[in-house]
Image (cartoon, rainbow, N blue to C red; front, side, top):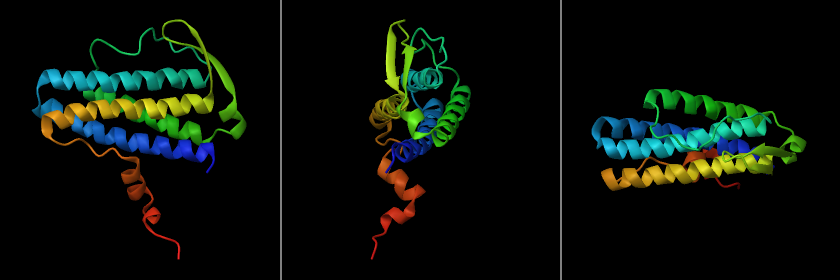
Length: 170
């Protein structure tokens, strides 16, 4: 499997998992304690901000962020639209990268102003894994409150997206 194939699969998974989490956050907003919803939404928004920072980084553009979080999350509908747009951007972006572009090292600036350097594939892997960590953090909040969390396993995604993976070659 190539790096591009793996990253493409991870970003399709990320979009799928983000949809599940957005639905769970909408339910929490409607039926749960406001402080718990705010905490969960702030974590999810942090993940989104980092996603946007790296959209700029992989393109060698300034991101303009001085922090990776915000005191208050935006309204869920606004956040959801922005997350979906960003997820689509990553899926499209990964699909058109060459192996050479994936390996290319890029200099960028962290939110604290310090310099950084990573390859595109390292940055993309960071985005995918960072998002998963924070979806898990929100999942813990949801599990504590409701006893269940949104489906968020890569294997579950693959079985739905690529059912042939459930078959064995004869």
